[in-house]
Amino acid sequence: MSIPGIDVSDYQDPVNWSDLASQGIKFAFIKATEGRASKADTFKDKWQKAKSVGILRGAYHFFRPSRTGDEQADNFLAALSGAGGLGANDIAPVLDIEVKDGVSSPEIRKQSLIWLSKVEAATGRRPIIYTGSSFGNDVLGAEPKFANYPLWVANYTLSQPWVPARWTSCAIWQYTQEAKVKGISSKVDLNWFNGSEAALQAFATGNVSQVNGDSLFSDLINRGDEGDVVKDVQRKLIAKGFDVGLSKDDGDFGSLTESAVRRFQQANSLPINGIVDPATYAKL
Image 1 (cartoon, rainbow, N blue to C red):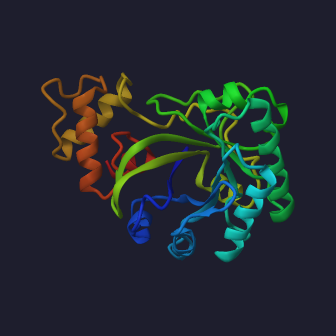
Image 2: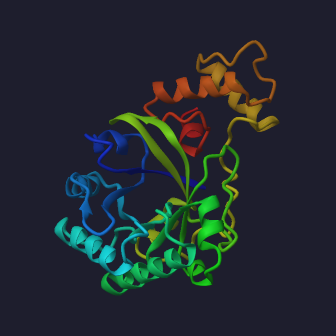
Image 3: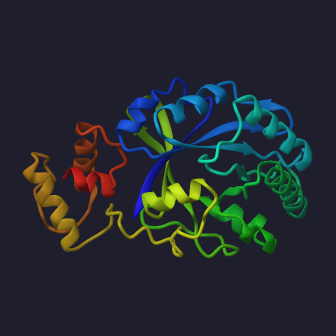
């Protein structure tokens, strides 16, 4: 099963957290810091409000390779402490590694490991690594120690994520940066957690054993899929009054079926992504 989540920064403000919760968003990553000294202006507010509506929360740091891992860890830990700290049911801290800033790959790997080790020692929680598929493969892939950290991968594809070779699967997949949700006026990133809701709850306490061992996300029905499962979706959409085009229930998930799914999601206060996820299917 795939569980929906979101990630936000100062660019997404204001956020109506009650609206997000009402759409089935189960977890949120919130930007806390960047580099040596930059702190997100809205982090504390978002950190507290996410918890108030029952959304599992996690904090992330945007890594700047031109600064040391040690000083960047200090920046992150100070911001986390200033917002109330990391609770027992909060998701582990995240290190967002996605730019080189002119720094060599070996130095990036070295300083990233310093950040990861220092934050783990301070919080008692093994951090999560966020990175893009290509960056994770090309820049981080030479360091075997990274495989010891859960992976949150950014890969904007409709089928399933490309997981960098250093990892065998991902815990979280950021599948779009162009989504629209009720409660945020701007476009926003959406994610899937790779497991059940019970597994997500366990993951939030540091137990990664229930994360799926593959990254197939096979319970998602989307553009390009074919067959009886798509016919079933098309028939359900038609029965609900949503036009899927002249071909109707042909079993081909094309642009017209995707458009109908988006309209259905909007009408039912679901995240609008054009993908038939478990929450959308349950409404159908």
